[in-house]
Image (cartoon, rainbow, N blue to C red; front, side):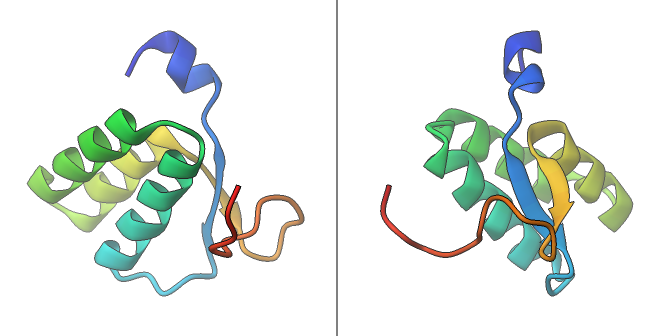
Length: 82
């Protein structure tokens, strides 16, 4: 990811979600796509599934999105159209 992209990571409410890595990748991927970062979503997903551990996978997700709590105000995880 470029430095510019890293500076504008979208908030993603993962804390408090089901911790299954497939679920977390899906939420993060949808967040990226909603923020017009489809290429980054594909790149992140590929890296996560090539990672060697759960902790490494979470670290990769954190490189692409700002991990927030579902209880924090701000971006909702709903599937509304934008």
